[in-house]
Length: 252
Ligand code: FPP
Image 1 (tube, helix red, strand yellow):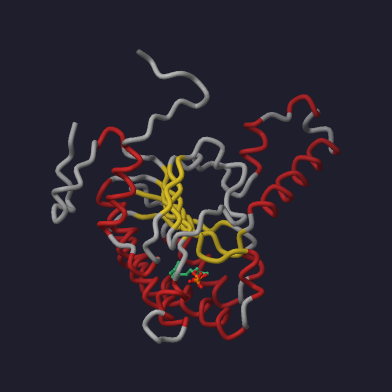
Image 2 (cartoon, protein in one colour):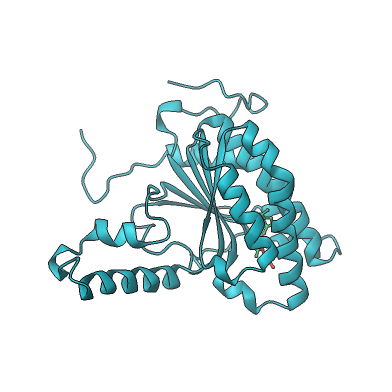
């Protein structure tokens, strides 16, 4: 069944409503290059990137995609110059403060993934408030990966499991893919069906490692500040062309 999208400005990109991904994860890359190409400071790219976040969140919500994860700040991004890190922390802070009303109106729940203890106290506070304020919203979940590293996620999960084994709550034989998945910071979320990475880089860069086992990968040269509704629809159209076999064979 083809859907008449609320995003009717793009009639050439028709999608099948019954085959939309349940969970889209995005590595938002290319802010710095977007700015450099225009002779602007890197932070201008991040600022414009925030507008893409709003556009993509709201388009995904309109389409009825229930889960969207945005890789906003990696565990390795702490190594960037402190001026850029500080700017990003303030940008996340401002985003949460200014978007809560729009998120509430659209029934969007915010989750935080990653080592959020490392975030500045003011950001941690507003993040906790946004998570609490939106916790009963059930139309869509937006997970913000902040200070997130895929390997760190696996390490933390392994420690949790080891503690459960040490305390006698779990036997080694009871450890299975489900126990591991539930112990990750994404426990409770479905694995992503589609991973989008912008800016032409063909890497996973320590984002979800365990969770991407059967995820369809979509890479685009578009830089994140230019990634808006049309680009999301193109990615979804490409996803709908894929034949997901999960190691099996196609029927017929
Ligand atoms: C990668 O581009 C982007 C980041 C490290 C920051 C992502 C932040 C945003 C998109 C801003 C808004 C986010 C939210 C959640 C409100 P880069 O700086 O590595 O770009 P480059 O590879 O071109 O240098």
